[in-house]
Image 1 (cartoon, rainbow, N blue to C red):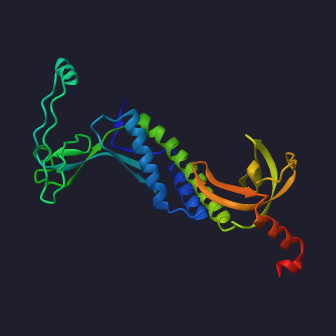
Image 2 (image 1 turned 90 degrees about the vertical axis):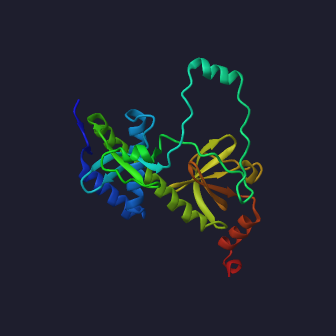
Length: 268
């Protein structure tokens, strides 16, 4: 199968339009969407096509729909690596681990951590200077190597980008709902009984859902699916599934609010 250094997303123009649209409608920075797409593409490439010692980074061009995959490493000083152990030597070391090394204390009185080479994210300076185009590589410099992209990954990338955009829309909608109801703590809201979950009642508040716990309900009150119900917004917090809105019908604020709604003089 042929490989291309630069891959193109199918239907790149609609993807670019979708990114701009959600950025404008949901108030999300275009850069944030692009960065999320790049991270998702890097993770997908690593999973199906990457090598263990590659540190993948993807650059995505929203205008063309093109993307490139790179292996990015930081140049570090040369250091001696421990010798490769045979299976027998590894088994022996596991059975009889060596005594721990004496800890080195620095001038500040704190333990000095032993530097360990990470071949996934680092490359030693001598090896870096042996690479074409990096004869004068310095410690701390990044060595960026373009990787070949299989055609199969190009097809997968379009779906990955689409999933990221959908997820971003969900996150933006959750943030809008959270902001809206966070400002309504202490208010009385109207909703309808949507479903029952483990003794709690899930109340539908337009595009949001709230929970009316058993502990926050008036004893012996009965509720039926679809009926209207009022509740006092007791708490709003973020959760993995979106905003968590807790209602109460027993809080003293609920009673005060009802009186204010029913008797104009009290509201005044």
